[in-house]
Image (cartoon, rainbow, N blue to C red):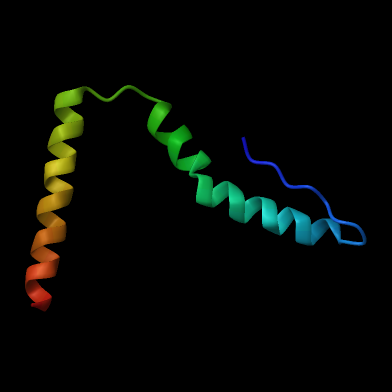
Length: 63
């Protein structure tokens, strides 16, 4: 769970900005999106292999 304590004499906007950054770094939205629907393990492995192949091809272009 992401928590932010508002410091003394701190504007609420700044505390909200800190909360948003912590929220993004914690990956709450990413986790929510991935868990919002079921993905079969075989489909998940296939997507991971495809992602890896794309990354390796991209790296091969630069070297």
